[in-house]
Length: 338
Ligand code: SAM
Ligand code: DTB
Ligand code: SF4
Image (cartoon, rainbow, N blue to C red; front, top):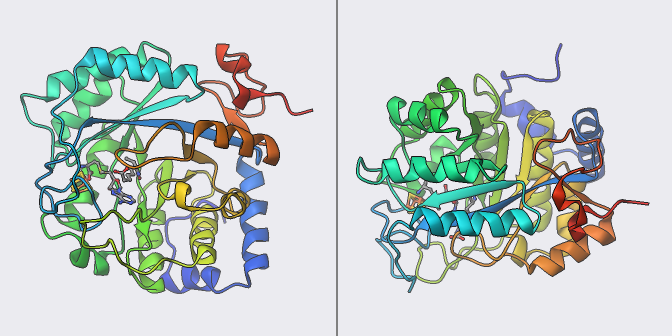
């Protein structure tokens, strides 16, 4: 039987979570090495292209118009500004540029602007990713035609816990958008958030949904909740770091060929926890000044951590085992391991 499966039962996934940590990490790292270079990390930079005043009520989100988080709202950025930021991200070592908008879905008025952003960022030689909320099949096709590589749309949590977190959109709606993205031929980026007060069974449920999709998402962001004052989840208890690491490991085992992203929450995490996440199979991060609205670790801190761990950034189009011939090869993230 192939190790790529989409018929995981909850009991099987729970049994992975229940393994002694060393056994779980060993299994995850063994599978990781069958599919990836364990010392390469894919680097994405995020930009919020439209910030705040979102009509949705996601309880974790600083951008929801339902809560007062003191965030400065901004309308859709001009294409030129986005391209300038993308160039800066490329020059500081990111291979993918992810653009996020605080929308329920893109409007007819904004959509052509977004398509132009995709074309111009792609022309810089970067991979492109967008997260704009729900899409119609026609919008997914148009984004694919414009050259969008990835579309991010997270399931966020288990189907059972979802209603506790969001009331203005449905789980099925999220799955439908992912179907349109997949059918349009784009790569799917979909994951979730942990540390939202969910149970261990909800983390199992989330990973089961992701791992049993018709095709595994190409990229699976695992976000640790960033608690933002003013949101309903601002005071929720911290998730034990080992439970976070276990979630990464189980994502790696159940979706062996997918990039697993150690996503939001790195700034609040020790480097030792991050290192264990990489050992558990995380091989993608957000790198730069901030996520969408909250800070990331300093770039220089990430560069230093990569050096200490012997990790290297993965480039735009080079197979992971080849040393970067890209212009970014001079960047400190691309130092040649000796
Ligand atoms: N509005 C679009 C949507 O929700 O699909 C795109 C932007 S939204 C901010 C993208 C993702 O960011 C959410 O699905 C959620 O998983 C993640 N996110 C938002 N706020 C977060 C927080 N405080 N901590 C961790 N992840 C968060
Ligand atoms: C994802 O899964 N996490 C990113 C990206 N996809 C769009 C966003 C994290 C946002 C964290 C809160 C903020 O900075 O606003
Ligand atoms: Fe809006 Fe996305 Fe934030 Fe939900 S997660 S409030 S849809 S920006």
